[in-house]
Length: 129
Image 1 (tube, rainbow, N blue to C red):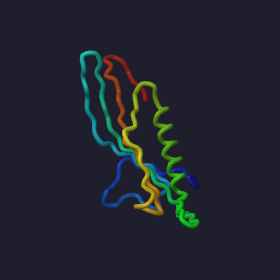
Image 2: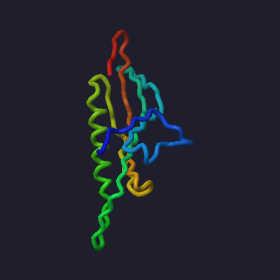
Image 3: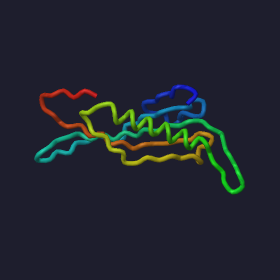
Image 4: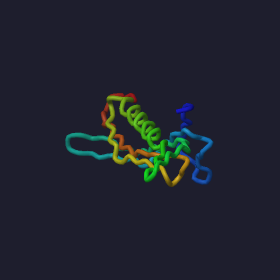
């Protein structure tokens, strides 16, 4: 990437980030809840993580058209996923959905992960992230 990504915590739907903000990462809280069972109690948080890069490179050869930014956007998504997985041993992350959207916003290549974060409910203990 040509520069460090700009990080957004939430977004203004009336004035969303655009090309000038790329590369970017957006963290959006989605929902929170708790599941309590007989043996284990935990809290569940859902967070949407979106990212975008700007890449206008298109290679066309005969019957093949290739958008190079798809590879860079996928690499960025994999780096984000690895960073999220490594931040703590005290919580569980599960990736429920990973998507790239190379065409709809071209030349912005957009990706997203829907995360489910599971935190155990431990009375009298402190959990650090």
